[in-house]
Every structure is written in C-alpha cells, then in structure tokens.
Length: 108
Image (cartoon, rainbow, N blue to C red; front, side, top):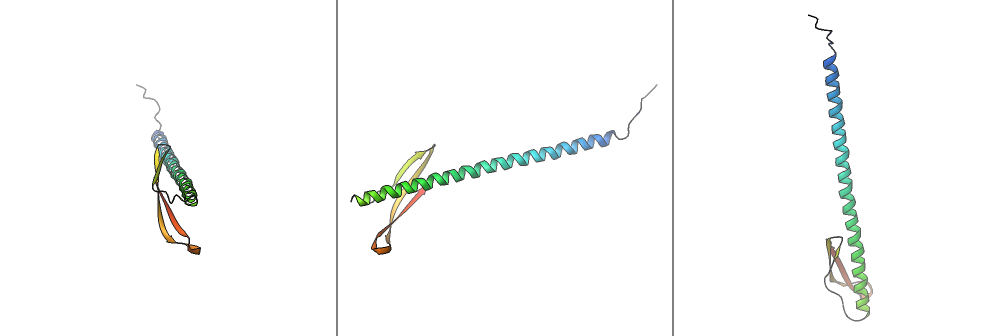
C-alpha cells in the first residue's frame, strides 16, 4: 500500500500558527483593556468638571444671597446625569480685609 509522502515540517507550521494566534489574542486583550481604562479615566474627569462647575454655581448663589442680606445658603443637592452632586457651604473665618470666608465642598 502506498502511504503517501509525509512532511516533517508539518508540526513546525502548526506550532507557528498557534504561537502567532496566542500573541494576537494577547495583543487584542491589551488593546481592549487600555480602551476600558481610558473610558473610566475620561468619565472620572467629566465628573470632576461637573462637580467643579456645580461648586462654582453654589459659590455664586451663596455670594448673591449674601449681597441680598439673606445670609449663606445651606446644603444643596442636584441630580446630574443619574448622579447626585451634593454641596455644603461652611464658614471658614475671616478672610482678607476682614471679610467672611466660605468653603464649598461638593461630593458625588
């Protein structure tokens, strides 16, 4: 019976293909994990910008209420994009030129 011609390099090709596919899978997983981490960092930066803008709004709201003579406002909270931002205003003592200092703290 004729068995045919056997190639001794058949195993080398199989191992080469397996190594290349494993390297490509590792590369794909690393690219996906990098994208996910960039998205989470970007989302955190957006939340910090929103908190900063909210704190500035509370500051100016407090400033106008002090100008009107109604006194400082207390704690405020507002939902922004399914996340609640809470602000508290507290007196910090006397500032420059004997003015009253206030601190606005925002948590989310």
